[in-house]
Image 1 (cartoon, rainbow, N blue to C red):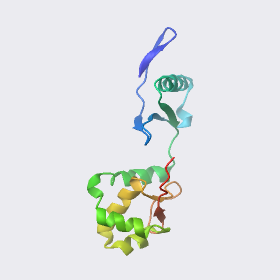
Image 2 (cartoon, rainbow, N blue to C red):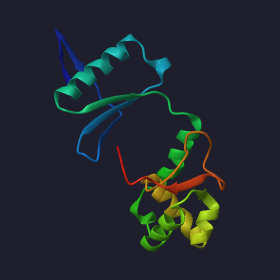
Image 3 (cartoon, rainbow, N blue to C red):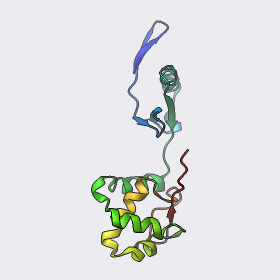
Image 4 (cartoon, rainbow, N blue to C red):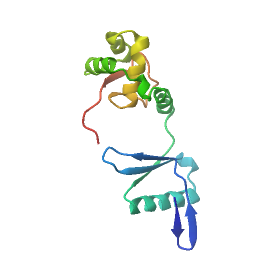
Length: 151
């Protein structure tokens, strides 16, 4: 992004761009709060104004908590479509209609080595949900079918 504020030429490359389900664009900058100085605040304010002018949202995210960061890094390995197997995914959705521990639910579906990649893929896609913020994913982590209503 680039533009003028008064006499000053500004430029900034945000960290991420995403599109929401409704088509709205979202520009995201990730920077821990303790690293946001006055100059950075000005850049973020400029970016927010540019986004507003074109009908996008701007979001500044502080540092992600360690468990959340580790869980996202883990699940990102399973984001690819190659991890999806429709029959296994369908069965996982049935099994996790009510909350169950991750491993117990996976074992109800079949061999864990075949089932876990699909389970992690569904967690990445938010079709299944679990608390990713307080502890690393583990055998006892409660998992359940995500709500069909999305914000």
